[in-house]
Every structure is written in structure tokens, then in C-alpha cells.
Length: 384
Ligand SMILES: [Ca+2]
Ligand SMILES: [Ca+2]
Ligand SMILES: [Ca+2]
Ligand SMILES: [Ca+2]
Image (tube, helix red, strand yellow):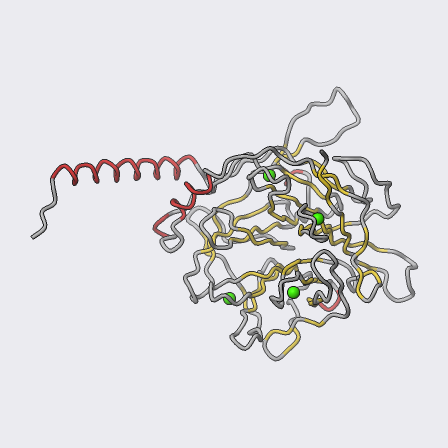
């Protein structure tokens, strides 16, 4: 017969009270904190402790080199009717990243498989993404794709932001086909609207460090929401909208006497397209985002865990493809709009590179199509 010593019980109680107190402090202090009762599977509190221990390293100063366009059969990839929206992921799981590109024309998504090797990506041709028996046409258009294993079955699924404000998902089946598109509607938390706004751009990231993949959603109004992944293994994809990112900006001005006040980015930036990455490799996740004005911004992360803080956003690349953080490239002469940034290590040199999808309108590039969207690769180099 086992006997539990009373001292052990009070010790366990004390630890429990301490943990509950700690937890309730976090929930009160932190608008993005997670409700463990609604998130039993992913064990966010434990993960939070793990992430916060991921201590800061000296940030790298990454400089961007003069950009070049992504080519298909050696010609620049030009998204039909513009709004090129890239995801760079290993779609076919052969070890090399592929391109998944949303375009405005036809509301289609195309898959370009990488036929090159590590450090030398080569893309030839492309196939329209199919979901169910048909081409996947994103209702309301302007698809922004991301590859993500929504239901933890080790088969990557695809999600798409869209103009109407709906997120669509296509689940991958065991035979490698994809099921037909379905809306992915986040659960609304008490006191929060479930609406995400319109013209959604999205990105996938383990926001809270619990081992599953969450979704960041940017919208027309310049807001960026966090959708926390609550999906159980092989279960129905379930995400809860748990708040929005608090990113500020100090507007540029030629008036030296002007106030150096900072404002929420939603005061100035429209059609925000977020991408979460630790750009400067200091251990804290940063957010790079594009805008309808074409400038690409970066807000450097200042901590980890579900309540993330950011330094005011700075311009990383201007809409004319010149730089702000390091002025090494001449303006291109074309000003682009609706930028959609992602990162990868394009040339496999161990330094992150930036890839920006864009949109621009020309009168006379050809007789038929006046709206275009290219992908530009800015290789990163670390300044010593
Ligand atoms: Ca691949
Ligand atoms: Ca899956
Ligand atoms: Ca960072
Ligand atoms: Ca690189």
C-alpha cells in the first residue's frame, strides 16, 4: 500500500499555486496570452518557458545586394495581371525549395518546381495548383499562398489569403492530391471580432513556440492578426484569433523640427503583408511586411514568447527597389505597389535572402497586359 507523505502534498500544492499565479499573471499582463483550457493539446505555457530561454545573440547586420528577378525558362516570372505573391517552400519534398506563386489574373496559384540544386535554384515551367478535380481558383481573387501542415498528418496543406477576407484551405490527401478548397474560419475569442478584414495576406510561423504552426494575417487596414493553431493531430483545422500585433512606425519627414512621435502602422500602411522571420539572427522573431505603397518594412523583435514587442518599423526596401537601411543600390526607375516579402536562403550561403513579389502597371510593356507582378531576389550579405 502506498502512503503519500503530507509534506509532499503541501509541496505539490505550493508549486501548483505558484504556477497558477504565474499563469494568471501572464494572462492578465498579456493580451496575446493563451487560454490553456482552450489550448490543452499544444501546451503553450511550457513552450513559452522554453522560448523565453532562447537568449539573445548579437544581431547580424545584413546588407542587401542589387536585386535580380526570379526567372522561369530564363525569362522573368511575370504574374498574370500582377499581384505576384510568393511562398518559397519545398512543395514536392525533394529537399530543394519550390515556388508557389499567387497571381491576380484568373485568381490562380502556380507551382514552379525547383529543378536546380542547393545554391542554384532553376525553375522551368509551372503548373496551376489543383484542388479536388479542378484548378484551384480562389474565390474573390488575389490569392496569397502558404504551405502548412494544418492537421499534423505530415502532409503539407495549402492556405490562401483572399480579397474578400476569407482564408481558404486545401488539404493534402495521402495520394498527394489536394481536396477542394474550403474556408478556414478562425474561432472568435470573447470580446474579439472574428472578422479579419479584407485583402488578406498571410504567413505561417510558430508564433508562441509550442511546436505547431500559427498564422499571421495582414489586411487592407494595416492590421496584423495572430491565429493560434488549436488543431489536434489529424483533426479538423482549428485556429483562434487571439489578438493583433502592436507594431509602430515613426513617419519619415523632411521637417527636422517635426515631432518624432510614433504611431500604429495602421495609421499609415495599407494592404500589409506580414512575414515572420528572425532576419538578424538574434534569437528574436522579426516581422517584415510589404504594403500597397510598395515599401517593404522591418520591425525587429525585442523579445520572445506570446507577447512580443517590436522596435518601430523601418524601411528595408523602398518601392523603387532602392534601400533605406543601406544605400547601395540605385533606384530602378519603376515604383511598385502591393509588395509581398518572404525570405529564404536562395543561394545556400547560410545568410537569409529577401524575395519580394510586387505589382505594377505599365502602358506599353506589351499590347495586352498592362498589369504585371515580378519576384525580386535580394541576396543578403553579413557586414563584418
Ligand atoms: Ca522541392
Ligand atoms: Ca496536413
Ligand atoms: Ca531578430
Ligand atoms: Ca543567402
